[in-house]
Length: 82
Length: 426
Image (cartoon, rainbow over all chains, first blue to last red; front, side, top):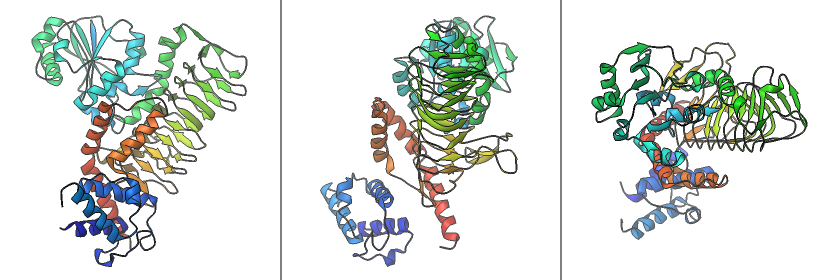
C-alpha cells in the first residue's frame, strides 16, 4: 500500500467514510467535521502507523486530505524512508 | 527473621489496580500491606518479589529495597507473605514452627528457617515456594485473601478499624481535637495529626467508627466525614461528604459525595458527583458531576469484567475500578461495576461502556485510540509535576510495557465497538 493509500485509509476509517469519497481538497474540518479530539487521535495514529514524531503545531497546518498526504510523505523523506 | 512480600500468579485478577503496582502496594484500610508491615511490625527487614517491569519503580518508591533477589532469600529465616493477604491487625505470625499456610489452595504465608530455604531455592520464587510446599507441613488456615478488586472495598471497613487499634490510637504526636469543628460520637475515636488542619463548620462523625486524619491533611469548611475513614497525608477535603468506609490516600483533592471507596493517592475528585464502592488508582482526575452507580435498579448482584469475562461479584453494592492516570471529563456516568484501565480518557454526557481498555479514549459514543503513548506520557508528566513528582525513566518504561501489553486488547475492542456502531444503522 502506498503512503497516499495508507493515509487515506486511516482518515477514512477514523471518520467512518469511504476511501473513495476522500479527495485531495477534502477539508478535515469543513467536510469531515474534525474536532480537536480527532486531530489528536489522527496524529497519534499516523505517528504509530509510519513510526514518525509529528509536532502538533506542524500537523495543525494541514487542512485537507491532500496536505496531510504530502506532509506525511515529506516527513518520511526527511527521515530517509521514502 | 526477615519478611518477604511476594506477588503470586493471580496478580492479573486484580487488574486494572495491579497494572501499575504489585498486589502488596494496594491500599485497604489506612495503609498498603507494605506500610502496614513496616508500621505494625517495626524493625523487621523486608524484601519483595514482583513482576520484573514493576521492580525498578518499586525500588525507587521504597528507596533501594531488596527486590526480586533469590540470593537474599537464603540469608536469614524468613516469612514469605502473599501480597494478596490482609493479615489480622497487620500482625505477621513470625513465631512458630516451619510451615506453609494455605487458604483454598493459595499460599498465604511460608515460615521457614534459613537452611530450609537454602535447600529449596530454585531459579524462581514460584518454584522455590513449590519446593518449600513439598518440604514442609502444609496447614490450612482461614485468611482474608484478596482475589478480585471488589473485596478490597468490602474489607476496607474492617481494616480501617484494625489499623486504628493497632497503629493510629497509639501513634505519638497525634491529638484528638474538638474546638473549631463539631465531633459527633466518641472523641477518642478521632485522631488528627498535629500538622493537619480542620476548618470551622466541619462535622466529624465517629458514631460508626474511627476517623484518622494524616499529616498535612486539610478539611475545608462544610465538609462532613463519617468513620470509619482515613484521610491521607497532604490530602484536601473540599466541601466533601465523605461517608463511612472510605480511605483516601496521600495528596488527593476530594469533594462531593464519596461512600465506601478507596482512593490510592494523588488523585482528584474536587467537585460534586458521587463515588461509591469504588477503587480509584493514582493520578486519576474525576471531573465535575461525574458519578458512578454502585447499586442496580433491580437490586441484583453486580457483574464486573475480569480478564475479558463478566463475573458475578455476588454483591449488591459494587462501584467502579479505575486504573492509574485515567481522566474523566465533566458529567461522565459510570455504570455499576465499570472497569477503566490505566491512562484512559473519558468524555461525558452518557453512560460509559462497562469496560474501557488501557490507553483508550471514549468520546462521542466511540471507543478511540486516543493520543498514543508519547503524548499520554507527556501529559502525565505534567500532571505529576503539579504535585512535585518527577516521572522517572523506569516509570516511563513501566507504562510503555503496559501500553504494549494492552495493545491487542485495545485494538480488538475498538474494532468490535466500531462494527457494532456500523451494524447499528450507520
